Length: 167
Ligand code: S3P
Image (cartoon, rainbow, N blue to C red; front, top):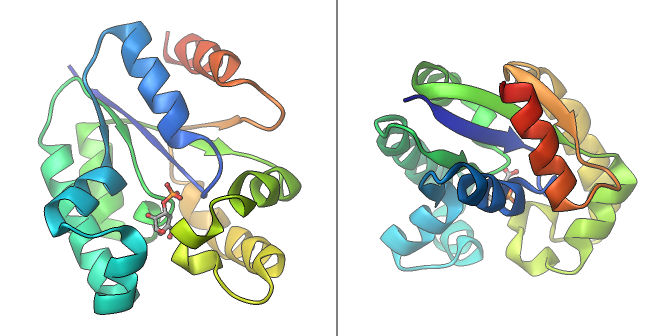
């Protein structure tokens, strides 16, 4: 059975939707960022600090390769997974890629509470950073098989809509 893989920008609800989707479909769930943290024995901000973004991306690609070898899982990815062509190819071979999106204002409000956990947004102007990264990444997220806007939707509705799309 193919995997169902949630991709998309930070704050679009990939982990929350993935967890509930897996429960509803009675499939195992994995969160790639959690896997990376467990394997490294460090939080994502600590990995960025010690090994830089390049070090984190290497660990992320390794986690993608492992996850792509699984069958029938629901997989939530980190927001930068689609930037690497080999990641996209491996994930596409292993299942269906659903890109969650949200309006910039929604992303800014969802990420502002836990900003310290997202090293790419830490700095003097996280709002501008979000808008810049969204624009830069648009063509990469467009490689997903389908897209779903999660703005203003409770996670239950997001999951209903994903299930409808998958039928
Ligand atoms: C990143 C997103 C984060 C995490 C890391 C880098 C990105 O995951 O992987 O901070 O490049 O967009 P979430 O999308 O789960 O916040």
